[in-house]
Length: 316
Ligand code: GLV
Image (cartoon, rainbow, N blue to C red; front, top):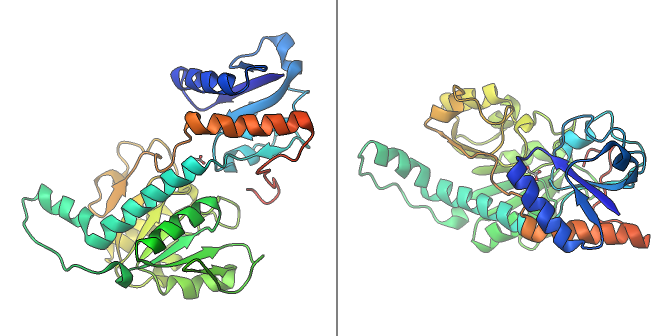
């Protein structure tokens, strides 16, 4: 089977992925470029946030497997071949990485470590009041694979954790291993009112785009912090700056941005109450993710159900 690997990564990263994928699927041919006569033979595209139109002209395509967990750009591509299943990356190792980043952010916010870093820059020796973990309320937006991994770890660390999922499939509050889970748009405002740290792990869809905005921040208690580890388009950047500058929010940890890389003159870089990460909260790791891809390719060949198929209309 011919497998076409493409996406937003440099040649070195592409060749690392090719090596790992080829090792997992020795009987297949993993290609990073296609001669014109090979195009019709490609049955699987393995994609990392590809440019729009990148999948045009592949008439034999039977599976589009994303290396990214978030498929918002992929499903927004109007040239996506209709009827070809799109699968997102779900790798337990990636969930662990995301949970680690979330844990670090909550711990640093809880214990004032970002403030200590600012104080160090000013040679300021000033211990802060020490809170207990059970005095810190964390709300995780998004109760999928990553939200669950993070929520359970935070609960185990002693935080008061709740979660919110956009879909009302399981409406009403539920208790899930120490995490109270709220569902649906009506449940969001009451949940926001009880938060010290808000962490966004939602998929980007038309319903969640711009969710982190002025009304959302106004619903948070004075002094709350916001952590965005999902997509830049969830956040209305000007609203965040206004809420921080007014002193309503105390800090933001941001991994994702409307424009990436974050432009050098962007105000977030120098803002004393913002911590910037370079979209690195949870990177797909070829050492584990190549096996996830291979499992779906095997399922395709065997005519078995594919795992983590995206509902393109729903957007994730
Ligand atoms: C990264 O942001 C991903 O969606 O995998």
